[in-house]
Structure formats: C-alpha cells, structure tokens
Length: 229
Image (tube, rainbow, N blue to C red):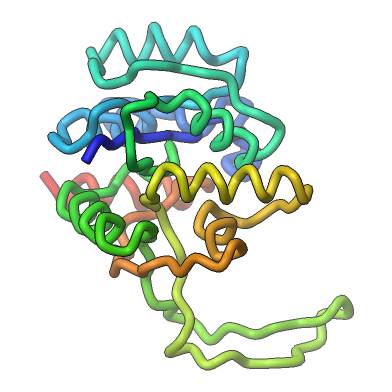
C-alpha cells in the first residue's frame, strides 16, 4: 500500500466566534492542526501528507506548523477552494502518482488515534472504501420546510459519520470528478462514492474523535487531552 493523506484545513472560525482559522487555535501546548498532523506524521503506513489551506494561510502553515514542528511527511501545502469538496478535490489532484490509496481527514479533528487509523485503512484495503462513524445517541427527527416533524428514523440504523475516510485512489478520484461534472455537492467524501454505486464499509469510531468547531468543543478537547496524559 502507498497511502497519501489529504487534510482539508481551509475552514473559518465562524462557529468558533473568532476571526482566526479554528485549525490554528491553541489546544494546550500546540495548534489544533499540529495535533492532527502529529498523528499522521507518526503513522508508519503514511507516505505523504497534503495540507489544503486557505491561500492566504499557506505560508503560515509552512512556517509555523510544518517547519516549526518538523513534519517531514508533509510534501505539499496547497490552496483550497470555495467549499470543502473543492478543497479535497484540489488535494486529490496533488497526490503522488505512486499512491494507490487516499485517506481524507478533517484538520480540526485532532483526537484520532493510531489504532483507528490502522482499522479504517485495513477496511479500505478489503472494501476499497471505508469511513469512521459512531452510533447516534439521540433520537433523530426528519422535518419539513415548516419545521414540522414528518418522520422518525430507526436510531439503530443511524450513525454519525466522522473522518478518517479511506479510498482506493482511482475510485475516489472518479467520485469527485463525477460530482464536479454534475455540479453535485455532497456532505462528505463517502457520499460521493455512494453516489456512483460503491458501498462504503463503516468502521466503529470513537465519541472522542470530535471535530472542534465551537468554544465548547475546545473545552471538551482540553479535557480529552488531560485524560490521555
């Protein structure tokens, strides 16, 4: 296996209520994105890491993160697009030609573990497509445009999807190109693969594998780090 990792990190801090990109906020001793990158830097199966950043933050990523923390597996820091989907597609186009699998992981999801990385990669080798997720804890309701409840899905069949998501490179490239041609915007990479009739294997994730998007998430993240020390 030759594995490339694409880290979309071109988000903004709107829900975090800060002008600063949430990925660059400090989580204890280092930036959120630095925590994330460290997990893949230390993973022996990873051949390269590509960061997809806002164009105006590329130099910051290179100087303050990649160089400062000596992330040797980061081969490129490239500009993202208007949407997360465009950013991931830019990352896919930058993947080394020798890679045959691509792992996509949110830059603001720093609590991924080596064990979970290995589990989702193993599943992708067998099924060509795998994604991490956890069972939903709450009852989910479907509503209409008037905020009236119209359906209650069976909770036992529902999961909250996370990243990493790992795919055969040709498969995920085809899925993104197909979506681009049809002007289709999906909610995650797995949805684009599902759209071209490829099943995606679910790997049991962790409730600690949160995406930090709000001040409350940041506080919870600090408690997670304290427990792991």
